[in-house]
Length: 165
Image 1 (cartoon, one colour):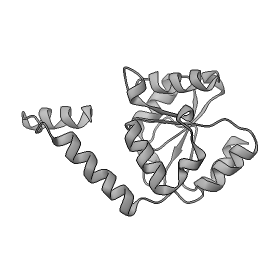
Image 2 (cartoon, helix red, strand yellow; image 1 turned 60 degrees about the vertical axis):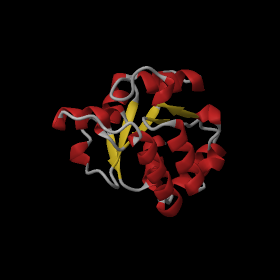
Image 3 (cartoon, rainbow, N blue to C red; image 1 turned 180 degrees about the vertical axis):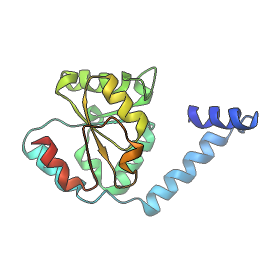
């Protein structure tokens, strides 16, 4: 949200209305409830990771409320506990700073160099690399050329397991 406010101000010299954030989130969450669906293959992937005892988490620039709403709307909430969901709200600086990924690794008890990050944004890839983590670009909605710096790219969650093995 900070980036939205900053961009509008930089481009127009104006500030957004005081109720902008609340209105924006109400509309986004309503759209989530109506339209959001899990990424194809992600449920199977999470099942395989859980079955193999591989720790995993979410480290998102979104708010905790946005993450919870998305997980609930897609049925993915059964795969995550509050201890495995991390938000930029948990740290002082969001992506592209490495803080969020480093915090998530620390909370999960895993050394950063043993972590693999899946990202679909250039800022997320920058953050993962700055944290010293391996990072793979998910390209179902973002072309690989917009995700420089990833060690590999995939557009189907079922293909991710080949990287992880």
